[in-house]
Length: 158
Length: 158
DNA sequence: TTGCTAGGTCTGTCAGCCAGACCTAGCATG
DNA sequence: CATGCTAGGTCTGGCTGACAGACCTAGCAA
Image (cartoon, rainbow over all chains, first blue to last red; front, side, top):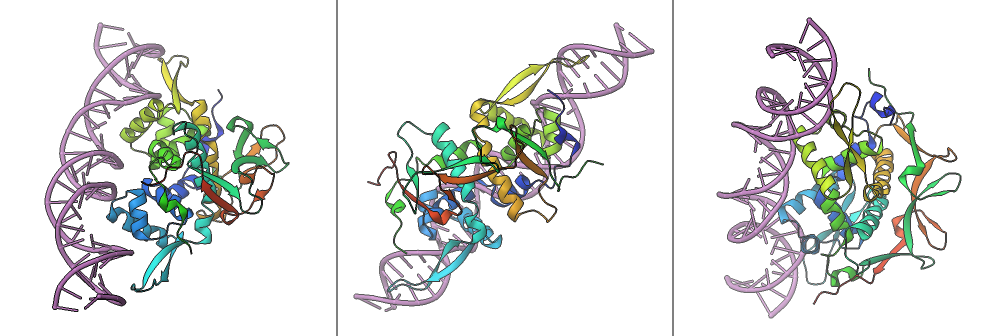
């Protein structure tokens, strides 16, 4: 095993680190899972994620502050005005992360009952999955088929 | 907005929750990022992730216990026997999650310098990315094109 | 005016994170 | 042999955040 090139580069502008700084907490993923399933109200989120109310409140505020969710007012008949949480475009872009987590969990971390949710293509009904592909059109089956190289934003260590 | 069907189902066998229970901690992602880049030794991991040594030690132990990493002994000339951390097949399967995080971070959470790392196909050299596709061969551009439905493992609430 | 409900906030406790110091093989050097 | 060096950890004490459970607060209805 040769010394990996990455050791000669700085790690503090890494996009994974930046992403994890925004969404890298346990409850945040569960909240996003629910929001992508159409659950948008505080009590529903609380019941389904089992997050302590205070933590949920804090995470939602942070997701709004970081521009992943927005608060939208609504009013049901005979109720006072409330608001619900919806995904912004920036939040919608998180979907591949969630799907990747879901597929991994289905394969490695749940029982034999099969997936609790299946994703289908809105337009044709076929099953949806996530995968690596190269711009020449090849589908990649494993991380071993990927070669990471330094990109334009890479910074060498002084 | 109709009431989402997911509210009638139980959320405690969710694969996202299961996955997050195993890898859902902040430092865990950073450790995995490094291991996928070929960084395998304790001190290198510590320096690059900036994780406190104790936390790193704990996370590595947990990743080994959960079967995502394995300890492999090695010996360098004039050094004592040590061991390094390598991905198991179960760990290698996490790659899509990491790539999805990376792409999101590149798009939404880092500066204009461009990506610090680019992924290329080992066999043809073309750029690699991750995306949703359906089994009929359509590439999906957004979460809005996906319709989630209850699967075989779904359990209704009593 | 009393009650009900969604969507929170407050309080005290307790687990886990953290920086920094310390420890421990095993090899090499004098 | 003693001494130092290094990788890979462990130990300590302070502090932050998580947690359960109680409480609060519009606004609507009866």
